[in-house]
Image 1 (cartoon, rainbow over the protein chains, first blue to last red):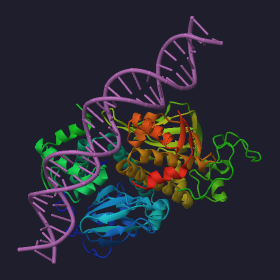
Image 2: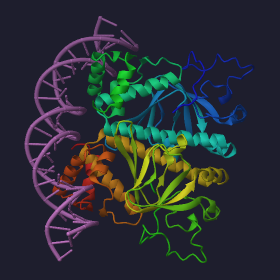
Image 3: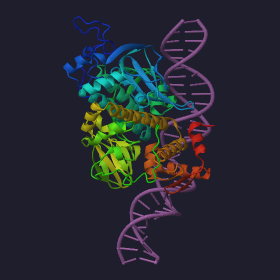
Image 4: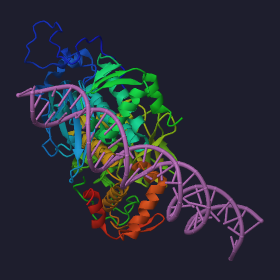
Length: 259
Length: 259
DNA sequence: CGGTAAGTTGAAAAATCTCAATCACGGTGG
DNA sequence: CCACCGTGATTGAGATTTTTCAACTTACCG
């Protein structure tokens, strides 16, 4: 998916206070100096264009762990780019069913579902203390008409979300429990790696139940499958602390349907 | 989803040769005179704007039953609006897994997945002899910068696709076989009804296997569930010919998880 | 230090899948 | 015109996977 990797980022989940930009007012939000620009909405924009996009990000907003960034039914006004932290999105039906539709980390966009009918169609909940950039959707549409590279980049992001969703459908429709969890973990580590984190050692930000909801499994099945992966020497699991020992083994699980 | 219903359409799956537009050259493709304009990309555009959108639809293309409109990996150049007929889209993984990600009928857009990386990420196959309007994506981006209502409409369509996909995830992740099939049938009849067809009598365009693939079930399970629905008096099933006898009963199946 | 939320594990139940046989239907060619 | 063929659909029975229910452990937070 991501063609451009970010340069070395030592503290990827911390804002770029370290970046030595001379005379920068901290209250001004500027994509041009954000260390997430290679992963976020401004992908592919030239430095010149980037400078003109001051108006894109209205402001920031911090969301403590467990709080909602937005809720199903709420009026849609803005998109949100995760700056630090970790979110889940979930949809629910009239009866109390609940489905986690995704997990979002730094640089990923939240709220695209809201455009369809001017109101949000899912809940977005912070799984740890988080902060987001607030992108006024009106502003984005306006700037998109001016900067075709921004327009195209935004379309790509929406399209990528559709492609991602189709991948989840494949997972939910065709895979057994082990394959689902393996695919999930590989996807997670790939995204973490793109943000400068280790590909093998990670801390899960979500509960077994949330993983299960995303993967269409019960939490007990998720737990059992983790245990099995550990027995098989694929990884070390200590609660939410994971260490991948055999990435190739995981990949084989996903790819070789059953042999 | 659809707020505006089309006026009376007697032959919804036939092009608008009947609409008495004076001095219209039949080779010119014009959204302004298409009877699908209320369901298709130009939703919400004023008559004035619509007239200016001559360039939107490049040309038409007909796709015989069983043929591909586009394939996974193929270069992305255009979106396609279904004019007549019926399509399925499916994604596949390296190992021969295959997942139907959607069924598209008149007025619905195909190819949105291709924007993300300039190549298609799924196959689109005609399930009956079909025809589509070819919408050059470059042209669409250009016109979008000029007409903000087109821009907004397009964004809404992409967003709606994302919302739809999340609904499918809920279905695949949380529902049992009966609920899935009921939800699928209700969705199908709702869309057919929006196009002027009966809400109760329909002919399935896809096989049990294709339904199963979409719903994450094996074809035998789909078949058994149809039989059960028939035993329960919810519908009459004769191969692909369906007659819904108890729509409320189907809705209850979907909504009341298990009571 | 205790209370609570999260995670693990076992055993039985339930849903779905697999494999296999049979049936229905549309098209084709003798 | 009709028998035949192939694809798609149906149905049964047993195997498999996942869920459910329940008991128990672990970690974290005030």
